[in-house]
Image: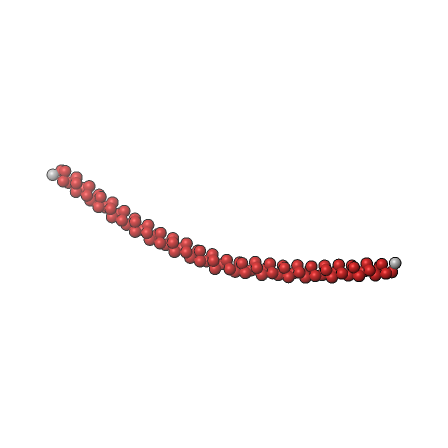
Amino acid sequence: MEDTLKKILAELQKVNNRLDGLENGQQVLMRDVSSIKDNLISGLGPYFERIEKHIDEKTYELKDTLEDQQRVIDTLSARSIKHESEIKALKEC
């Protein structure tokens, strides 16, 4: 009976040792996951900054293009009005 009890205790000790190993492995895994998460967040920050800068540059380019196009439209409108009045003046003559 005593031998059986010793064998059971020895097996329980082996199970406890395995559980300790699993707990240590889980702690290492959690540290690794946390490290990966931190690295991922740190790596995405500059990426999003570059995207934001690119969008800002393209927005300014579009704004400049639209302003140029609006100036051309304004000039053509003024010329059209001037030409219409000149045509009207010629018809009256």
